Amino acid sequence: MTDVKPKARLHLSDPLAAGDSISVSGDPAHYLRTVMRAVPGDAVGVFNGRDGEWLARITAVDRRSCRLAVETNVRPQRTETGPWLLFAPIKKTALDFLVEKATELGAERLWPVITERTVTQRVNLRRLRAHAVEAAEQCERLIVPHVAEPVALSRLERS
Image (cartoon, rainbow, N blue to C red; front, top):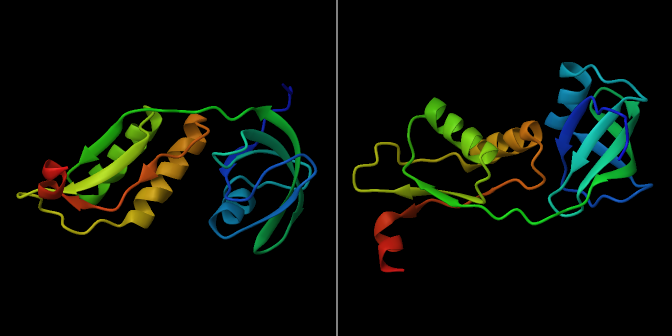
């Protein structure tokens, strides 16, 4: 374990190992650069749901990306089994809150279910996955819950 406190924590899709150099772009780079005002030398916690949590250092920051040098394994990966949450989609703000809290409470899978009386028929899975990632980053989970494609309740009853 290290005494260095990371400035931020990021979920990445890249494999993580000591000595790796990773380029981060898009929203995570914007978050580091603009929101956290990170500069080269700052520590960042990174995880991918497979290789545990690692301490990385920012080596370069430019307008569209940041480069990270992976240094030390802070926490080894462990399995995180939890309940599956099946839910009827609700309005946007409440649904975002539901995904955030379910992630924080350890849900393993989030599964929208369309019922006979469901008012909201469309589900923005990309937005739900982004909220699940943000919640996992903030609550220090190593695994982001799987957000499944919506399914009709009638199909689940037959299974």
